[in-house]
Image (cartoon, rainbow, N blue to C red):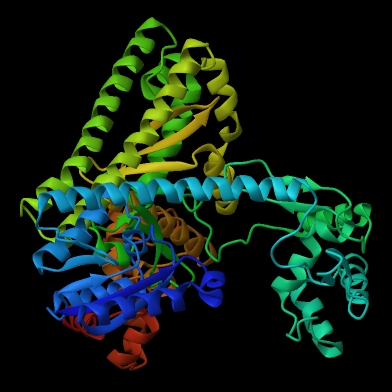
Length: 604
């Protein structure tokens, strides 16, 4: 019988001390006693709760290639402590390839219902044991720190005496801390510049080069004025005073933090945009939509669009991959905000709040409907593994569907929490028109703001937004007194946007024509075309649309203009001026000048 040995430990400490080697010796001895042929030995130094492990993945490939009859491990919890779906995936792979799980003295056949049931129980116990161990370990570590003990990596410039179990200052390098503080506070150098100066003098205590990040960590670390600070997930940090021998005063530390706050500035983007600080999500798939820059034929001018990133387009099943011009959002959003500020009636209409029993009843119904959808999505996730085992879809489809359902669950969970906060705010009368008026009052004059300022203001007002590709509408989410208020705007029609753009450009050209005519009295239309640099047909259409500006000579077909030119040509014929020269002097077409001259000769 062909056997693959699988050994695993959770930490490098176990690997170095005894665990992997002892497992390997024990299992090889057991396989030889059984007369099994060892195909390969797979190992992992990782948590049993993770499915994606190098050794386990290699073992699965070996199983799927049909090279293994038995997987031998010290105990089933060495193989996995997985969640239900991942455990079922592992069992399915073993079952489909007819592979058994073996422990010293025990052989489990997953095609046997009793053996599979016992195996499931073992997996559940292993998962529970893992959680219990983690909780106990974290509780023990917190108490260990509270008692003034230290574990982990020491801060730079400190050493540890194992015999005395004390931390002491590294006198050889501790002077560097004073240099770093002085260069930052007195010389006002940045992290990278300080690192460059230190590299000219010395290395770090561990013999490495200084980097900007290392300098920043030294400046931010409270250990250097004596405090030991430990952060634990889901718990408040534990602070132990006077744990480390101080290298700087607390006052200096606070000065440094204050200076960091002053120096820190949000990096300005190369091209500020009013939507750039708002997280826009797709209403269909929940992915974030990015603001893309598109160049135009005019130098230093850009068009902006939002759409799915190219990566999401390739990995998401969302069909909405269109580019949406952000100009279609700008005017409708600003107009909607102004309407909200205009009166309480319009605010109630657009924000859909009343603050009365009717509004409360509506919220209760929405909470109930969302809760049902959330429960339904949870049931879908629970039933997913049964559908997979029944052969409804393959492993790849299972993974994809699981990701989609989990995303839906998260969206529904967030919506449910938001609705509950809004319900509390409405019932406690936290949302009134005065509150809304105060919230939106900062946008009293949006049109006058610079693009970078508008970006900041709108980002503060609406941290998030959702775009519906089907309805072509964007909903901006404002958080007022812990309640989410939605401002929905219909995007401007792209054809109307183009029409307005063309009209605005036409008005701008017409104003240029007036300036040219004012600078060149008695200017003809042909001269105007040449001086403006625009196409003759464009100039003609602009003049037809808005009329001929005052000071522009009448068209060449005008009788007075014709008579004036005829008289000028009569004078030129008397001194034998050529047709080409006449055309040049009078700025006429040569053929027209010749025709006028022939008419004059016939008259005489």
